[in-house]
Image 1 (cartoon, one colour):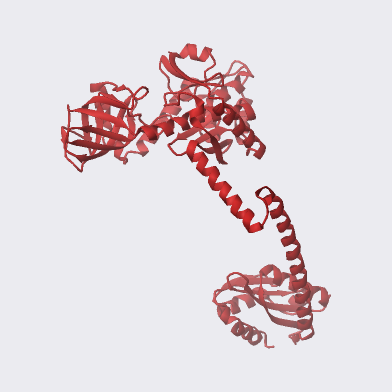
Image 2 (cartoon, rainbow, N blue to C red):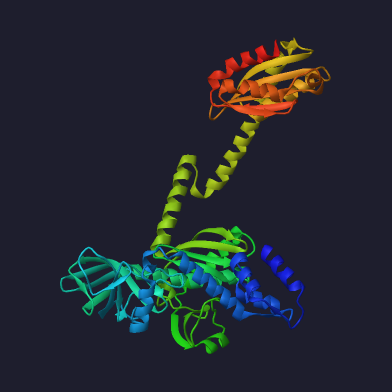
Length: 515
């Protein structure tokens, strides 16, 4: 793999006790999908340390570049405002782990990047509360939606993000009334949407552990998306997963789901978590205390997201596809619960429709299709052989009708529907029949699918020596079919747009060659 080769090259000049630079570790992470942890493990085997501080500097620089690239985004129009708000107000209390609705106070309102004291109906606003059940987009989990209400006031929250770490901000529109700083409000998330997100987030943890079980410990998270209707998990792996591997990952995940294992969530020190083997995402910054999510005894991860109380709430996990997103990085997309049910139902209905069309039981569809493919291939072969025989017969007649021009025999023929390959095969027949006699051909055909005209000129060595030049002829004649082309003295071809011009093109050939 390219990443492994890059690391091997970097280690060539190092010896035991040396240190691999943080910039190289970052390149492995950013370009080749190598997690920092994996780089450390490989280096440790050779007694080489890795500059973690340098790696973190590169990671922070990348984050800053990403922030700079989003300067035009509505969330970043007031980036300085949010930094000032965080310094002034501190981190709001997050209540979303234990409740869906919270009585809160509006601490700040931002409109078009500027802090304001109030906002009337119809205004797009960004709202900071002192307490909030709204989860800000983070760690792959999308932000919450919902409402902020009071007597005569309604704000429809369309998203929640964190423009500054530790500062959840609700973005929405004032639908009724006037939103005022200092107002007492009720902040309520869309609980059904949150429940769907929680199912997908816990399922992502289960999926990662199942992947590690099937593929090996080299599997590390390389990105994720946890949305209400789907989940996406990027991970390090050196090749496309086999169908059997995907099926086994799916089986393990659903076995855990159907075992209805409890989800245990607690806070502990980062040191204790690492000593306990809790999975951490390298490149992420963790404080002294961290939040651990355990799925029974199956998986343990550091995570600040929202989760189900037990795995049975997920219902079902179905992998939709597995693809590549870069060197040594794969992506799995999956659905859970009713989204998985709907996906399976749709697939089943497609299968039943196919079985009805094929007039066979659903479980026999694959065998029936394979049989039809074999028959189609056999029929296609027969048609090709028949067409070739007919073409050879037609070419044989054309050879018999060839005219002598300037010391070589010339064949000008319209082959009807055909292809460039078909014209080449026809020329092969002529060459075989001609043996050493000087022969040249100019063939025309029409693309079987588009009807576009095709033209090819060819000559054997004896005809070229007699003065035939396929490339020059094609250049001169191709405009008649509104096309262009060229080539060498012995072979040239052209494509055009106007098949109606073929008769005129054939006449042009006769005129140019003086036949």
